[in-house]
Image (tube, rainbow over the protein chains, first blue to last red):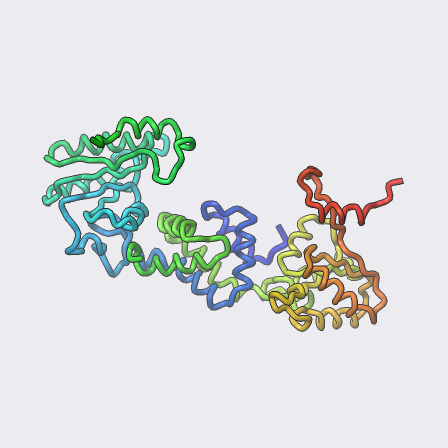
Length: 202
Length: 202
């Protein structure tokens, strides 16, 4: 491609490495940036360039947190219930649960799901860190909140076995029909899980 | 939102200012960046932050070009036909025509289309620059390649009147049925234009 100046080509190449951004979107974004005030564009560029310097992982739970705030605000908050620990796959999942406001315990980021395909082995998960937290005591319940996939199930099985030495209550978030959906559009696997996990009404 | 560290919030805010990027996509992009190697992310950030320092507009045609290459490579190329000038709205449009390889003349970026709604007036267009180029001589044909909209038509009318003093051939790209499309899906306006602009076969 000789249609673009050198530095624009470089920007297009970098933008296209982002997930869901192809050549057309990259071009649209790049030309948008060229039309925006230089100062605004610099602010975006700096926010991106500096993100790895300012963000780190919480030394306790593995959530993302400011470098200046480690352990993260959830791990140090006196308002959180330290007897309940919610096990999630990725740091992003914490924000999803926090937005619901329905959970007041603490979290632990596993950092992945066991997968032969993606070459994720037990030692790639933050299991040692989990053992350390359990040995420190205080935790009574572990809530599994992993993705409902083959890898998710395998990981639940593996972690459950790891946790056998401790006397803990192990629970899992409910999988079933999402609220606001129409039964017509719910897939069979979900319906099966919804039936299996049915609750007694009366 | 207290779910995110300060610097991540700042990044999310900046990302959401981009066209077509809402809160969900911004979050997906930000967490993607956090998972990528710091060096790669810094390269993207720098490419964005520096784009306004390295890219400028060609002093002749208004296309985007490297600061070090001004006038742009098209305007200085000895291979281009300087008798044909293609009039486009935005710098991005040049790349679109260049990719076809079907045009070997030079370009002129108008910088907008007349629009009462968006408050674009004649003095906002790069018309003085166009006059200067025409007065310098050599140009024989102006090819209008503006968007087929009300604003596009108004701009064609206005520029045509401006160009009356010069004896030029004025042409417009053909509007009609796009190749590979099905007549069923072509709107009536396009069909009318295709009829109006019909060509003699035999």
